[in-house]
Image (cartoon, rainbow, N blue to C red):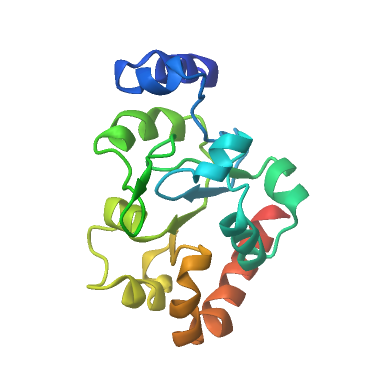
Length: 191
């Protein structure tokens, strides 16, 4: 089995990531050997990449609130891993960030996941992560999130971006029903 350091170096040396490595940008993910919770999303935000800290943005603030964890628990508990579909900010598109690069997760998720054998809950944040890991999902993201309990050990979530305020306002059941269930599962795995 490869070590975390070997994989990190291989990611940096990968010709597909040459533009990032040449610019001094390191891949942004977080492996914890004792992790019980994995977070999979599309890619780091521009703000997170500039800060060199995953989920270091308003979306991260809301995600931690939904999970019911403090910043210290999120970053230092040793129980939470973060492995997005792409480890680099993909750039800006017409209506938000560009999608993660195709094939990136195919190449890097399996060796990284092998380093974390204790994961019991994987949060799938947003449509890209759900498409990748839930081939049998519902027809819409909203329906998939409503039926979150059907996908254990995966837990599909809407993206916590401030851009999704309208969705959250229109779907009040999410914060009434889904968030408490998420917090209960997260709390049990952090203890």
